[in-house]
Length: 250
Image 1 (tube, rainbow, N blue to C red):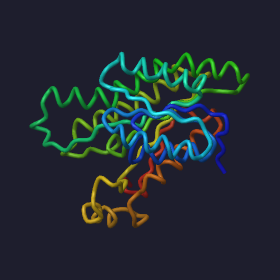
Image 2: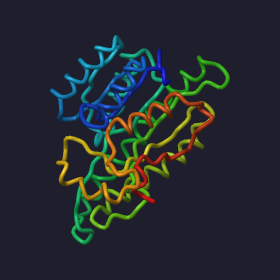
Image 3: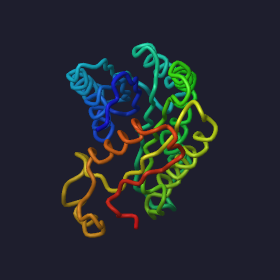
Image 4: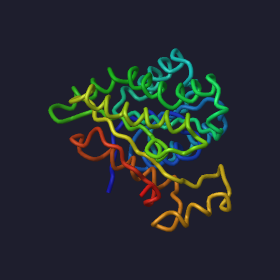
């Protein structure tokens, strides 16, 4: 259903979990993919090997998303490896549980640096490449940016104030970039709800099932399918935040 042959994709933080699932789904659909990682080198190299198994160009690059210079270097390296960029996915994110009255200024700033500032800096660095891709494709052709937001950016979670605020800001950044970067670049956001990954046990997630109309928690594959939709749909769809939560937020 979704084919991405010839697409040149950069995905941040895609060595494991949701980012890995997105990268594999895009490679299976025919896209060449560069992923970034910070500390998960072994996982990144394993994911790189899996991506190449689909017969596409794939590379893992180290990038510290808290460092603007590291971001600029990684984006240029990705564009060089793929001979351009047509799609950027801001997947990397931080998550932390803290009572709101204990959050320090450093913790607040660190959360926003990863979840909000980094997507902006990645987008800024990639924009010339995305615009060039659009110009080569002719009228109606566009580069794309897909941000990975969160249900927490739409609902207040009392013990995740800095996380929720950073993701809400990312949702608004998505809308702002969609207006600013048009018509050459379409910008959208996928906002996952409770997604079961290797980071938690079935028991820890079980109580969310009873709150979810679809009676199950989400999987990384659910998020990857939503990303595939935005990656392959008409670029006339822009400035949208698509919630992938099984109805949990209703």
